[in-house]
Image (tube, rainbow, N blue to C red; front, side, top):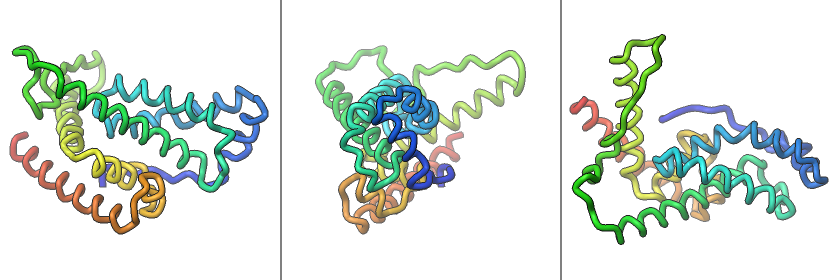
Length: 204
């Protein structure tokens, strides 16, 4: 498993959502503060880029606010918000891939598949040593590189299950897939991550 988080209860945010519908902007700000870090992690895991992830999260909250009238409460608010975020991240990923396929390569560009190339790390003055911080950053980059290597559909399913801890049924609803397909994608994604991490350990 990549990470663990406590799941949100289905009716936890219903009062805030009702207040938002009544025009209470403070209630929506509360929801933003509550879920923006979680949505950023989700978007970053799907996209692998913090700048793009930040933009997607902003767009997701704007879309959620504008679409509150369509939120029927069949699922938790956080599930609905997650679906919006995943869809926006998927669209952004498709745009980025399309753009890349039409761009010519430069000699200054990072090598294909090298997610850590061209990235630097500026450690703080206090705390762990620079070497320890660099090692941790290297591991994070390599793990994210393994996730980035997955096809988008497999990446989304893995992140929703192993990071966000949604059920197979919930993921199927979000991605509009049969539950069996979701389980198959997650199993294959885990195997691919496992193989990738084995290579990383040998190289590290």
